[in-house]
Image (cartoon, rainbow over all chains, first blue to last red; front, side, top):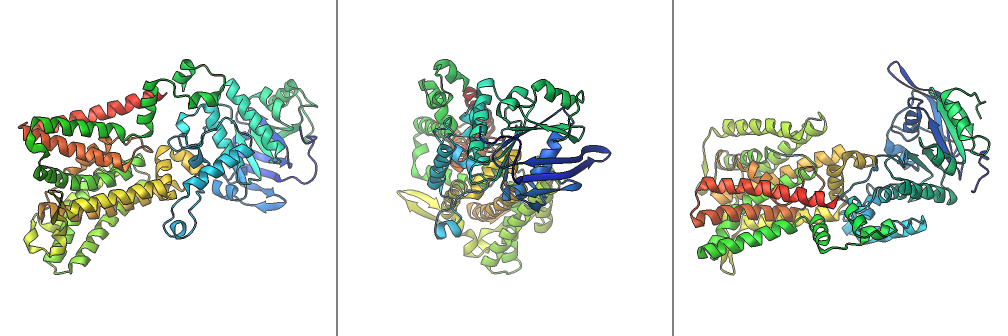
Length: 262
Length: 344
């Protein structure tokens, strides 16, 4: 494991005092979150604790009413997911958000297709399929994703784990700064979940910080460096797998145990 | 994937999906990846059967007739394919085409507008109709079925109001307008300019759909709009552009229609919207979007044309021809479903 997990240096992504209300329902009630370079930060919490809302604010799917988000020390304002993506924050959703009929390479480059050089690409906007396949293979090899050997296979022919691998690869490729995974294993079987966890660990080892939202405590404790516990729209605590047990984490989540924030 | 897992209990998932073990699964996989294969087989079989039943079927004059019958439906079906790839449906294609052809004919013949300008006005009608349908679908978020059911009636009414129900004869039109009906011989078969135009449109759209980012986004938007949105594709913008492109194709269909019937009539071709959907479905394009090719649609249009023509040559009543086309549609969709289920 790479970092010592307590968080050192400047956070790459920092949220301060995020508030988000839906009518009279308070989704976030002043949440702080820090993500440090080279770590896996898990976000856990009971249903309705504000996990999803927090992640949506960080990835541009929702705009917080109050509070600030800083990326590499600079304040950012995301109005839509594309804004966050343009800043290098990539998100993997639990719904396996890939296009089934398109092949692996096409999915990796979906929305940022490579064009052919010369007027064929600039004027006629012809895409460079060969180069995209080549680059896709390179990216997958570099990420150590061995479950996808043929990038010309339509995604619908892949297993759930392989599809999620495509989604993770898409998020992690192309020099992204932060990868956010929202319940990436919720739709997967045991062995496939394990593959995704390995991918998360290898992402971190390559220096890409990861935010992992998960319900699965054993998974969280296996892969996370630090754990952000969300409760009633606030951060109840940030703990580490070394200093706290799963029972402690559940106790903090449910309010049975109090912990100083950070 | 599961049938592979049971057929070859390999330890590695990656090996399993590469392992196309049985011949049957290989065929299914092939049909699944290339949905145009099954309509191609149906077309070849139909041609063989009708050619065997009646020797006149394969005569050049008859093949020429089939190609002309297919030109208009085939072009409408091309526009329809674009829409259906986005999981939409366009009931107004026939009505838009007829409105376009009336505008082209009337402005040139009655208002004395130069023929190229008249064709330009026809294009404007197609684009305008596409923009209107696209606006209602993407901005007001109405279901395409309802939007085009409404616009079908609106365009039909506009056509009759505008034309007063009168037909414009081809003889009164400038030569440019009926150019699409001009023929030239290729190996004894008379081919019309309209047929060539249709083929050029097919080739162009096939290249665009396969070779450009826009083409991929059309498939992605139809396949899973939410996934496409999350991948950063502006789905609504893609949809709007699809309706516009379809409108432009319908304007060309209007031109082909004028040449084909050597007239512009407010009543000809109104019912072709259903034939266009039939061609697309027989051609293997999924009504749920994201799957299909324009070549499948061309095959579908040819199958409908061959069935109608072949059955009438054999002496089957026209009502039974329609019956047969109906059976064909249901059979095509059933086969399609079987292939998809077999995959899972």
